[in-house]
Length: 150
Image (cartoon, rainbow, N blue to C red):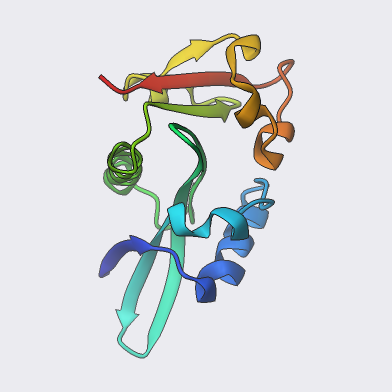
């Protein structure tokens, strides 16, 4: 299996939305923030590409929302997941972010490994609260986490 991680492009949107639907994740906002998404492409065959994973950032000035981390289950392994998170965090810092937020239902320990810490929902800046992605979550069942650039 030959795997490539690259910036998403318009022709990837249908595959990306399919992955999100299968994972029961929110696809709203993907098109508006496409330039800040990475895709994992399986290049089994030179004539056929297959998007098998993705992760992205919604960027609002110096803050971002990490979202849509998904890999097709048969392609998932800890190495690919770890590399995707490392790449998207690095990408965010290079884009000038000072803080990265995320919302999760059950992956707090995974993100704590990266230095994310739980924060109160009231501490989320207003510009992030306006995100359609953020609005899909509720404090009664999801945790907000933040990573601050050192």
